Image 1: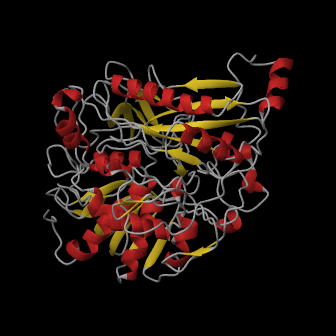
Image 2: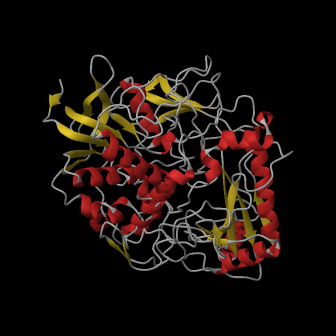
Image 3: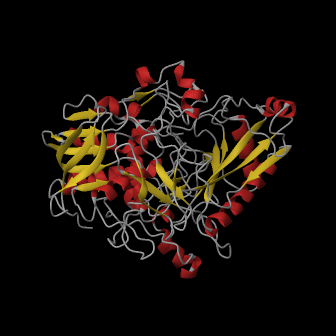
Length: 587
């Protein structure tokens, strides 16, 4: 029997990038807010301090910051004719766990999705015709435009101290920035990070082919900065331990460094950790949430009544809680009906590795997203006529830091063990760098999320089941843009190259990216979206589902900046429309 607690105004499920912003803003408006996090408390001090901060075994091999799969995992299959099996070891993606979530260990690349990404279907049909989309492609417009989100992008970038160089200021193309980005209202909060030797080689090679390279935008301060919430951050020291690690210098945009110092001082906010929400409770008519039920670290059940429930956890948990709670109709791929679980999408990353015999790089130094990039082959920035695919991805040089256990790139054909392997490892460790490509992924009728009928978690609840495979569109796109990256690499003059497009059957085993999207997608049509354009549930209006779960398909950029913009977009609607008149928000 659950213990019923005193009612509060707002429950926020998940205290990460999205949840901390929502809690901070609503608590400051005088609402009583409870943030519920299934993981432990984490803060820069004492949790992220040296020497443990650079422990590769602890963080990269044993996944200390990641989801505990022994208690909850997901099952996976490539199509619905297969039997899904549990993911027993973190591989393709690494969801975070604990206060801050994936915002603790992310690599800080902070890209805005382009105007085309928000209107993928309509713009594709307008330019190329309906037949340019695969018959089973379910990609759709978001219901919100880039222009509407622009001020919210700007706010998130200032809170998360993003550094970069604008390429489009109010429609005016600015040299040195990304000429293909959507119009910005003003420059980045901070100037770019330093240019490494690898980035300089990439820049020269890209320019020789007529491309316009620019600094990768990152949430890693290039200098001391104070954000709009009054929190001051330190400058990056290029230690090389960023992606997969917490930052001991307080030099990474994470909830601990951007929002929590203010949030935790607010008397209207209460944080509950090691508390796993298992259900959003609904009234008898299933039209209104009355609170949530969670289990604490001792196995006790508590019911927290609330007037407003904000689901702000990772993609998979957002969808799973909606399915477990009966919010929205589950997606049926056979009948092509229902919405919750529909339009799950991943991404299509690929790479090119360059090896030199006559150049040296300080490979052990770097920052998560440090590098230069070109965007000529992303979104619809190039003519897709006759190519057999839509979408694309950016190409960037990588200077994130080569850690000795995790990073040992070697030319193809090198023996995998023995003295020749050791010799090549020592020779190339400081004579190599990579080009990374973040490719888009469209949504398809057969890619979806639902509850597994067989496997259960530590609480006896069904695991989430992921059914996914990439299609011809993604394979053709990956080969095309990876070959373009290989041309840039060749122009840089390496002695050897590995060219690695993403083709063939998707496997969940090797790490690729933690950029899962969809399953609770947004839109203007309740028959094809789980939430409206303000991320409000169509079926239960006092539930908002905020995060990358709202993406109707995945773009060729890292998602965090767009998730941040959607958070402020939904927050504006909650504060200025919903709270003044609770109920469905009219378009």
